Length: 176
Image (cartoon, rainbow, N blue to C red; front, side, top):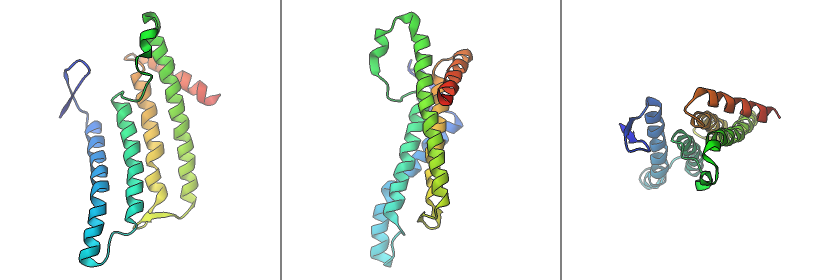
């Protein structure tokens, strides 16, 4: 399977990208199929799917986090649009590095906060359904923010030196 690059050329999809896309499709399919399956099971067997609304709600969280990670993978995160047209050409590359570093720092802080949140939730005994702890589903939050952070850093530049500079800025910002 391939996708179109910005210049119209076909780019082969990595196994990770195919896996992410397939997993997101499965989550979305489950979200779509669970409510009618619940109705069908209740009408035919008298028993439905235990805590089905909570399962769909948690799948929505997972889908949102996966979608954000995929958007970061594709370098399609929301930006300020055409503001780059106001920046002189000689400043475009350094501006992209600094802006990417700031975005990555924010994403990393969200990852750390989400990890602390999951750790707090882990201390509780809340279950989604079928003995699946809530914290297991919520792990999607720090995992997605970690992926977003790394992908933002990857997209700041094609060169490793600029990525290292961006990573250093991220470390400094998070440390501060």
